[in-house]
Length: 294
Image 1 (cartoon, rainbow, N blue to C red):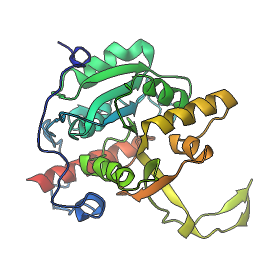
Image 2: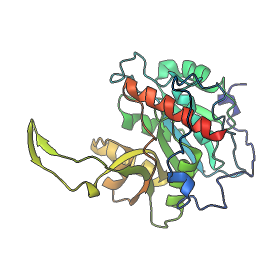
Image 3: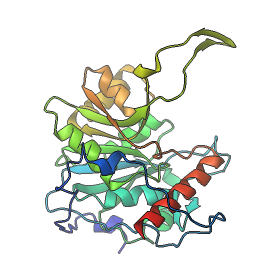
Image 4: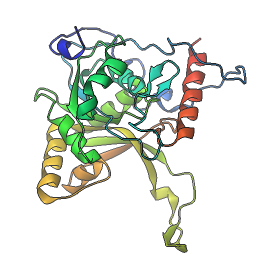
């Protein structure tokens, strides 16, 4: 039986996000990992690295959409980077496993090229012990189209949707819970975006000319997951589609129709693999996490 065929199965588990530490203010979410010395050769980490325990509650309220439709133009690898291996697992598997370990996530939608669905499922999903049901959706030509295709696979009974870049393998269950709790904890919030404050000096330029230096205190670097109430993110996408608007992320669509989106601080190491050197950084970062678990 494949993971897709397990759609209707529910696996109760009482071990949800920690309740003894507030998921928004708890130090474990935002703290940088403590470094431990290890051999400078950075030898390959065991395949069992950070094996997260999958769990699905009796009444999950959240569906996860993992966008894995990129073609890898900037990375320089034909066919994208989602199936490249980091420490024994594909990049996509690392991302999906984090959502599998969150009890409130009852469905994972992987959005990937239509002609590669079987390959993605075989290489990144079926060969790993996922508990949460997984379905596939076809990617579009634009990221926005892929998000909308993923949303169409989410049943009406889910109150929240978490949208994540499949090329961010260092996301953690704690960070996902942190973003979800931020939306739940604010009655008038329509969504929450994970990010961190800009640390570099920013310049406004035209060609090679500097026009100004804005105060970087007002700027944040945005990551994923981005969590939304399901009804408003669907409305935002449908409105954008009807009016021909294309945004750079899902939050921009919700902001555009007047929705309130919170920005919650996440760790800087939640990087997106875009160029080859990012793969090296992700491998090293996951290796350090593994050492901290010992």
